[in-house]
Length: 232
Image (cartoon, rainbow, N blue to C red; front, side, top):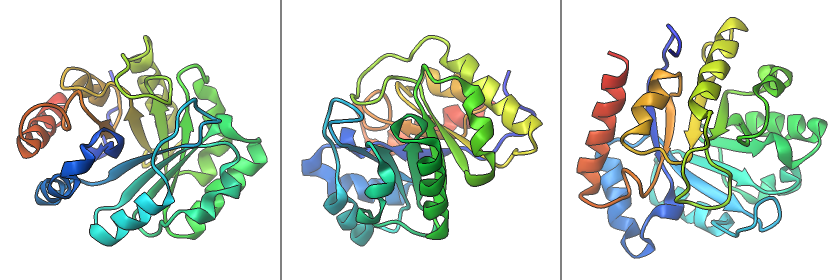
């Protein structure tokens, strides 16, 4: 399973799952435990049937912490909205293949890169992996949705592990070993190690693991141990 070439694993907690009344303390726990990214779900009520975190939220986070943002734009025509968001060196910005025309999506990815951030192409569960070949020269990563975007708390779509493995094998065979695979959806303590074994290296976590019951720091350490142990 997976690839002989494994990138270092990173954890990206989904802040839509964080208790807003405890957010400052949660971020302190993230900083103490060297969390790599903060996953920000941006939803416009059009591309997905839900509304979620916006521009002011991102600006406040940028002022509050040095942890890079992992901005997931679940919006229509992201090229028209990109300038509203604060991002730069070290941040990730993901745009969906399904959200605009191919050329506009490429232009969006190039604009993200020009600002020093890492452009990721996001794909829904039903989108075939072979569409990635058209984006290889303008992405630093692929965000594979393992649930249908829009709502937290869903179960992983069947076939997701096999899709992760196919994408990792495709990227490696194309000489793109350094392109990351991020996974988003039902990344719990049971499934995260399996996703790691199949080739994922960035893990969007929420209420089924790091932001679930118990001490946040303990939860982070448990997840790291499971991810590290998955490839030994």
